[in-house]
Structure formats: structure tokens, C-alpha cells
Image (tube, rainbow, N blue to C red; front, side):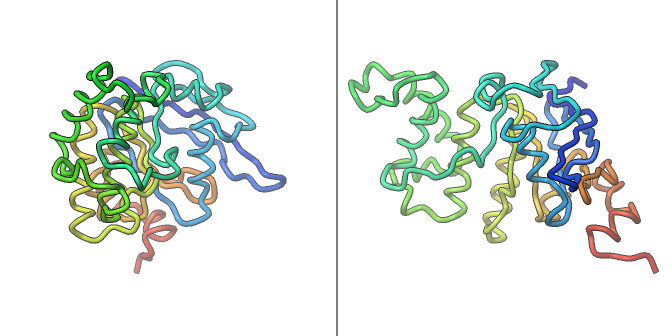
Length: 249
């Protein structure tokens, strides 16, 4: 399968702490690859190196075959790297449609003046309308973001990230704060996403991980201690002891 992301021997130290200890993993086209591990395992440090916010001490990162190890974050985005938590906040006073319009315009490198002479921006609004029609947020298109439920805001953040047309999407705990129904809706939304881009999913909700992931990598103290399918991870004694909270009898 075509590899969208390849990480090889990635090392990141902070003083005497080895936060990322020779980590290697791959994400294939059309795949959802989950990265799990206890708090403090180094997940955020690894993700920040992929995004370019932290420089590794050693190792390489390739995106769609290109070495991006030393590229700045903006160049990685231009090459097809997206992440939901790049969006620090939604614009609460604007509608769902307007927020999504800004995301589409950002991809095109515009000046965000999409509300001036809107007829000249028809292609933006046509894309927004098509995206909304295909989503659960369609009926909420003209509702201010401030009036959305938490789960709806999560869905909008996902849609805005996808508006950048990434090759690889990094998702940081998309299930956080969601109720059962909202979690199921997000799972279905993510299943639909895989046809458009690969996903590296960081998530603590193991029900969602096992429902979504083609492969799972387990990070503990900066090291990948296991990688495999959901069944393989469930059956791995080291994983059960270190992360899933079980011990062999």
C-alpha cells in the first residue's frame, strides 16, 4: 500500500528525558492508524514533531514520499498535512456556513473577504453548500456557532480541517467531551473521511479506537511497545498491563 506518512527512528529529548525514543510508524493511504498510550507517554510530543512545531534530535519524517523533517509547519500544510487542533477556536458570532467558507477560502490563499461581492466567490459557496449537504450539519448551516452543541462544534472543526484537502489528517481526541450518541456520529463521520485522506488518530476512547482503527500503535514512555490490528492489540499482554489496565492471571 502507498505510505502517506513514514516516521523512522524519531528521537526527541528534553534535557535528560527521552520523550520520543526511536519511534517508527507508517500510515497508509485510506487507513485510520490510531496512536494510543497513557498520559505522559509522549503522544503530543510525537504529533508536534510531525506538524513541525518541535524539531527532532534524530530521525526522519516523510509525507507522501517527501522528507519534511526540517520543513516549517506552513510548508507541511501546503504539502497535505492537516490537523483539527490547528484550529484554536471557531468564530462563534458567525454561522456554520460562514466558518466553513473561511476555511475553504484559506485553502485558496485568499484574503478572507469572501463576503464582499459574493457573486464573484460562487465557487467557494458552491463547495461549502456541497459539503454541508453531505453532512449532519446541513440543517444547521445558518445557525451561529455559539448556538451549536459541543458535538456539532467538533463536527464543524473536522469539516474545516477537511476543507484544506489534506493527504493526512491528524486528529487529537475527537471524541473528548462527547456523549454516546455524539461519539457514534463522529465515528460514522470519520469512517466516511478515510476515502478522502489517511488519518492518524490520537484517542483515549478505546471503544472508538477499536471501532475505527485499521492499525494501532501503543506508545509508552516514548517507545512504541506494540503495533497491530485491534485484535492483536487486545491480545497483547504488554499492552494490557501497561495501558488497558489488565494483568494476566
